[in-house]
Image (cartoon, rainbow, N blue to C red; front, side, top):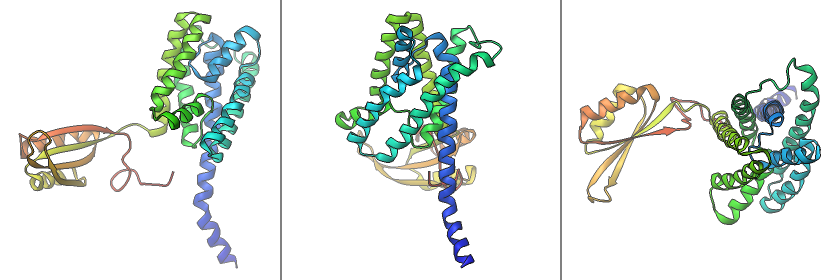
Length: 302
């Protein structure tokens, strides 16, 4: 009985660890995003889109807590997400993240000023914008890794995408851009420009956190000598190589496409090999956001 129970625990352990990891990402990411928001955006009324930006504008006129306004506006968004998307796990995790974010934003707004020797921690709008984008972006990236979001325009974007087929990036640019432009009429256009800067840096930081640094490149080579090219690449860079027959759309000629994924420092070696084997070859080099499998990072269930 003991062995059976132990074996069951061992089988369940990976799932338990994944659950713990997801919870850590969600909690720590939300806390980090709220800290960046309370430290660097709210003191300067920097609006970078979303419901949180609308919360800053409401706070400016009413004095009502930004976090509370954010949460109240999120409730109908979450209901819309559940009704249109039908993904209750996503909606529940987003509700947790949005509630925790709202509570921490208001909590940090109360406890940080007396705790810090100087508040705001900087008087430089540019510095505040950069740090807001970086800290908030890292926090958001961790939340995304947990399979969640902060709700708001993220849910609206997914619903609109489902109905229209538009890319999420275009939808977010329109919704967040509209909020930032509205803030420009209230706080001035200089603040609006800083808001766009925060939005840009936030996107870079969250993508970097979600996908990691891009250290790999995928090289494709159009060649008439696939066997020689493949053998030379394997000998020089010690990476797996694939090739298959292709037809030129303009010439109609049959050639071969050789593909190889390598680390960034190996790119020059690949170019040298291609030039040595066939100077007339056509080479393209693309950024690989992730390379998972033998020879790179292990492929694991997220």
